Image 1 (cartoon, rainbow, N blue to C red):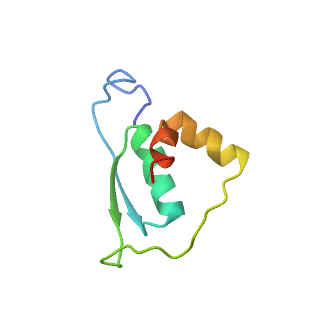
Image 2 (cartoon, helix red, strand yellow):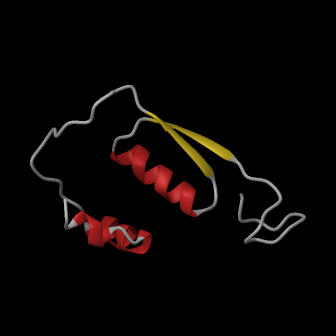
Length: 80
């Protein structure tokens, strides 16, 4: 893992893994965010050229909200 200490420090590893994620749906975006916060270089590929609204609401459980709070993006969600 990038945060592992091998010939460097956990904060400054001597290497950086590149992760490719296919799909920018909820799962792909959540995975990308989690991997980025762990120090990975993340690239997301999505085949849809223009995102559009597919529904009116999204239900998030308590664990999902805890994760979003830890990532620091809950305040931005309320402005959408």
